Length: 200
Image 1 (cartoon, rainbow, N blue to C red):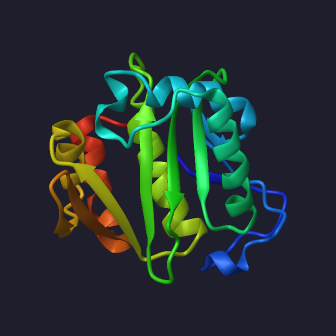
Image 2 (image 1 turned 135 degrees about the horizontal axis):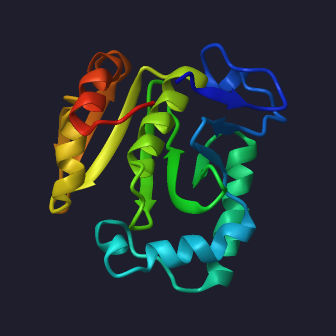
């Protein structure tokens, strides 16, 4: 499946700096879509991040919807400057399933995080969102490297990420810090799709 990026401005050929100031990015495929977060998503995000099971491997989040709205308002300023991209991913009937975020956009890399999904989806939508977010960073934003940190106890995500053969670059008491290069990602994506029986 060909990944389609939608915007109301010019598409970047290489770097974030070349993106149109008025871009309104959306990632669209046949069976899912990813759109930028807005204030109406505040309750959904709070419910996800404060869930006892889903939130155990992410940073602590306030249960206040008002605080989340305020955070989104500040985020939208960073989004407008193309410093951060926070996506809600949805299925083909626009049911919300989760979030994923590209942030800490540096000269040579971006960081991928805030990856979380409601339980129960049988179409690998969370994994697809991860793959499409990486493609967005590599193809749309023009980066060659992605940084990803994973909690050491998050065994499932560690197993999944290691299928791409990222480089371990650091660690602390809670986390492993990895770098995934663009070429390595594309070299291994077909293997990963076959292992997990995912069709993109």
